[in-house]
Image (cartoon, rainbow, N blue to C red; front, top):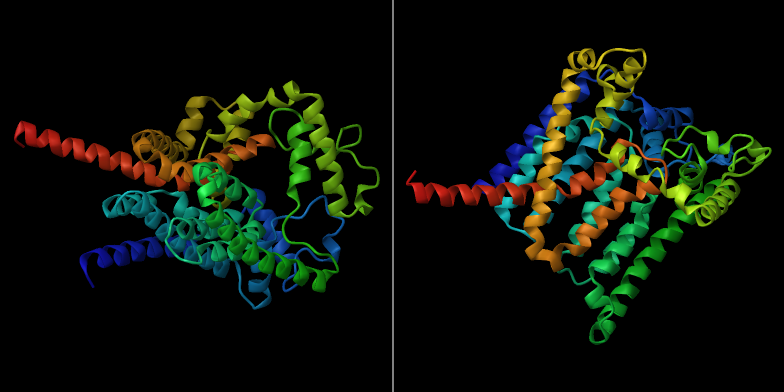
Length: 425
């Protein structure tokens, strides 16, 4: 085993050992969406989600994480098994990110990216939660590595993976838009139109095969052709006509509100989704200023903190608990003293986020190569602002942009080496 392979092997082993220790110590405490996914999974082990009993829910959660969890529980597993599967997927994400860094830059930047991931607390803690982010990121980094590769049939493979990505979290359209925008010079170039058409045909072939396979499988099991979650309508009505501060407090669907549907409990979820989409878009068109007014507050909230997965796993360091303490008139000084780990981990997030921005600026010389990647990351980042917004929604983009932290560090490292030669050290 050469030096580079030893580095990847032992650093991956270190990540796994630390993660396994956290899994062993974890007491099973889950809150927020992770708790909901867990309760959905244990409610009907072995039954495909959504089943007929879910047809009258307000919406359908992202199906992949629930169905994988239900299968594990049906086979006799428990939360620890799900956490270990999360760990395996996280290892794939780690190596996917470092390969992207190597594609954009070089092997040294790839190693720095990997080390940064190892120093990022949420990369360990998020394994403890039943969440969609890990599944989405896993398939996303595979697709991105295929996209930046030279494989002959890469668009066929991307097409095969695309519906699976959308099954884990409904953001697949963003990748397609990012490809078009980032490759505008190729997509709209007449002399390359033939190649673009061939790529599109390969993508469409793979997409149609898997998309209809998922839909038909659900239709066979439940009687309805369904391929992904249905959160768009619910999120849209809350973001457009809720309390207008970017929060989901369910007010938008209550009696007297824009999203209210009489006898909603007997209306199928896909009908409610259609109604809420129509009303939400209508509200935005008719009152755009009122819709856009909370956007600055949403943007601030998106970057308030980075401890969503710590919240999921350890109640003592829950941001929600801290906010509750603040409301009962605990002083800021007491909150800082009571939550030292929370503030320490946030400082690391702020530093990394600042380094990402500076790294993107340094990488501007690679503009044409990194444009699709940047468009994708920014799209995923700001999409939640169209609906209600939570701080954890920045997570996928934050991970995607970690290679830019590495290029920033590498750039400063080179400058220091140059300065050392000048001063003779």
